[in-house]
Amino acid sequence: MNKGYVVVASGKRFFYLSALNLIETIKTYDEDAHVTLFTEERFLDGQEWLADNVEFCDDHSRAKIDGMARTPYDLTLYIDADCEVEHSDIAKVWDELGDHDMLWTGLPEDRHYCYAEVFFEGARKPDGTQGGFELCGGVCLYKSGDPKVKQFMRDWYDLTVEQYAGRWWPTKENGQEDLENYPASFKRWDQFSLWWLTNREPKYEDLKVGIFDDDARWNWYNGYKLNHNKGPIVIRHYSNVKAKKDYEQWNA
Image 1 (cartoon, helix red, strand yellow):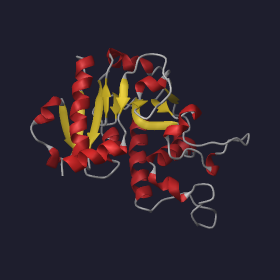
Image 2 (image 1 turned 90 degrees about the vertical axis):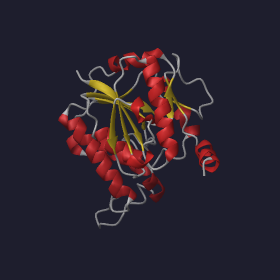
Image 3 (image 1 turned 135 degrees about the vertical axis):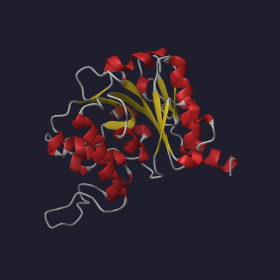
Image 4 (image 1 turned 180 degrees about the vertical axis):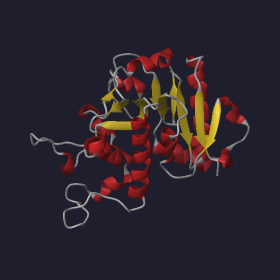
């Protein structure tokens, strides 16, 4: 099976430079890695040779999902650009998929201190308990050669574009936005469109969607304060707003 990594860098040069660092670390720990970089042509500076394949994307804030949909591989590991790999288990990540169509990292309750919003009324479970986001979009292993999985990624991107543009949101029977069940503050998250497709879209109800075993080691968020992983960290995620702003100021 044709397999490889997808990294997407758009919008800011910070993400392009972070993506180059990520690609270097992937290849450090997986000598057979094949990496496709999706980025904007304006960022190219001669260092893009680090990737095995370079494709262009636009500057949409969620161009990453477009790259996920356009992967050239049958089996893909997508990693956010502001990450780095630090363990050789990355080369064995393909074995994690099992019979799943997609594997994500999770948002369990003991990590909610890191996230701005998780629960919303529209996700309440049949037993009456709170429900909300369960999947994190920073790392995803998926059967991209499966037409239905690839269409899922395309639909996720298209729905996110509509959501961000204010042209789509769940509605009540009278056609008005259902802000009681799906608050307006959630419109800023691509995790909402991901949640919608995996929980409310009938054509994807048979997709086998799961979460990595010991998932924190596959997406160790730099804001974690507790020991959420059992095995060594494989992917460290520097999703830090202050660090990004500092970089932009230094390179203005």
